[in-house]
Image 1 (cartoon, one colour):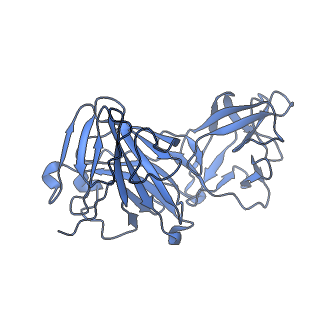
Image 2 (cartoon, helix red, strand yellow):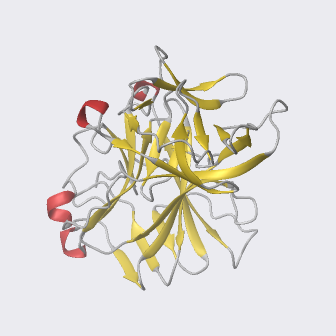
Image 3 (spheres, helix red, strand yellow):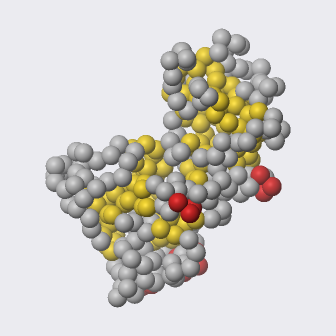
Length: 311
């Protein structure tokens, strides 16, 4: 049996993010330490809290770069990483919108708002520095361009084989168990989610994927469609997906597992469906890790398999 022990596939393409020409445009609303719609000064500085400004429009392209409604490239100005849009600027890539609508930069949905002293407005930054003061942690939510979660039957929406197209399968799957927090379970062929067990998946992304758009997808076919795999499933199907701050290893345990760098939201899974978890600029040349954990009463264990129908 020729099997790649695969969980969620990394699909490489531009299917989940439309280009500016396709009018994949959105507005942003801040929440957290500062709240309100994101407006824009005439010079392209993006502001929160200045009620004299109208909501600004942004458009995201397949490489994760953003332009504003005037066509200006949105950048992170050095050294303070201020998010603003300038005439003639080449937009910074690496942005994405998660399945829950959160704007992310390099997989993180954490931004910072820092007071300007002008009309109650705050600038937006991706990192803190000594040059900034009076800053609050925020998140930014888009009102459009959100990757959809498919609810079509697997035989219509899931490929029957992964031999065509660009995809990556996990090179490490390891469970971590809160009931046995110091036990390392090494790498496994099965993914598992229970009330105490979650699973971490490492993906190695080729350097050749630089400049492309990646999607994290979970394929969950009907058991009758499986040739060489199987699964057990019960409960409400709620699973939380998260990107981790660094890859796992064969010695990873519950207590030493990498921290979450970006929560990708909770999806209710059920057999016969495929799910786009998140779409983002491909982290070319890197190993990235994602975690699946119970967000309700889910009990799921599946044999990671490449053969039809892939799971």
